[in-house]
Length: 311
Image 1 (cartoon, one colour):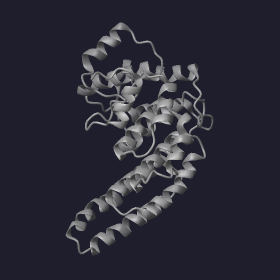
Image 2 (cartoon, one colour):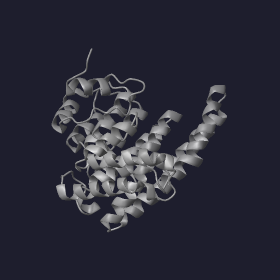
Image 3 (cartoon, helix red, strand yellow):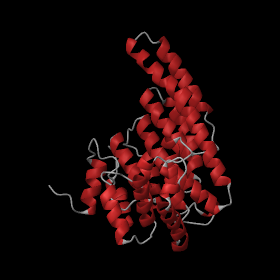
């Protein structure tokens, strides 16, 4: 059956998720339609895969309008979600809803951390801590990882031993990476220089210089969109489109696309891919692409997926 209407596309993506289409977010839809779909069709029971797809949709469309509905999922009387599912909902709220949402989710995370018992739950909680962002204490999460590692080591069940190495990796690798990523986030956010913030976010989005991509790239995408809401981070808590600010972000991507070959430390084999990414982002932020630019994208994009793209 052909999926044609916006609601059918959203239902398929969120409620009937396939195994390999996680980044195929239905794009170009009316935000009001997407918001209505979430508030009227999203209710328990929901699989963790559906909740992650919901997270992708809310993030892509910056749907602050659904924050109340998301908060309601945390306290839904018939939800019966597990710790991992609640962590996904909480991080969707932390990343997309205006203050005091991050602070509230930081507090809520402490309850989830105390209840976590499995590697899968701790993995989702690390991502929750990442979405909460800089300025919040990672020690409770670190302490819980140590506790679970000790429990796994003393468990007579041989299967428990298989959790020891992954738990060690979360503690010794993932947590320090979150800490380093948070330091970078804090440094960029602290700068009053809008051009600097945009340029650094573009570098992160393109995978240049910074590293820590699993934590910094989603943050940079959100930052670039929020730079269109206000001139300074303090003015960017609530979604309010500013065409002039949006054009400034588009211009940075347009200029970068034209100068890809001059980017330091970039393998020439990656030039075409990076140019496609920049052109798609420029289009996403409102720059009118030329016929030559669109032909270039068609020729070189192949199956490339860019999160700042209308394609």
